[in-house]
Image (cartoon, rainbow, N blue to C red; front, top):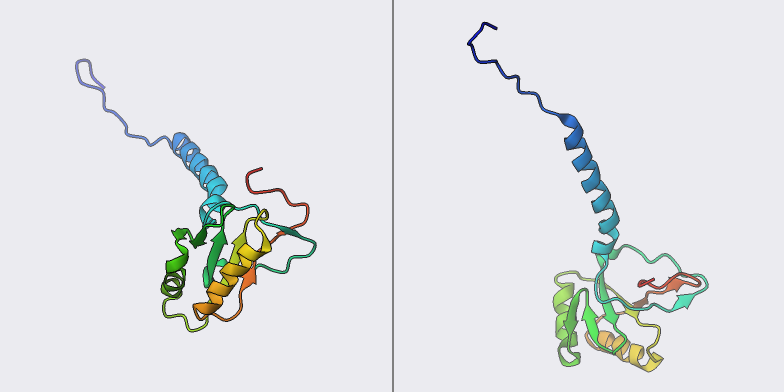
Length: 141
């Protein structure tokens, strides 16, 4: 470099901040991924001593009954009079869809049974029930 000549700049990528940002984003996505997989409203599930395997969530239609008795199909609120049509629409072309119910633990059995009867009247055979293991903490805890 001679006197009076401008200095040549070297362009160098600093990797350390890039790695820091990527690791922070990875941690954020790892924490949020389970929350994003949940469908429907938050309900306080009843406990059971030995729940069987809950199965694959992708291959089933999730019907939720919230604490107020409201019906949900996956993550959409549905009125009782449109429940059967909405359930058939959610099943699409699947010839043998699996329907499972998540109901709030505070509901009376009769309210859950009404949802089960409505599912059967819509033409679906068999209904699964989702429960949490006894002693497990509620979703809001």
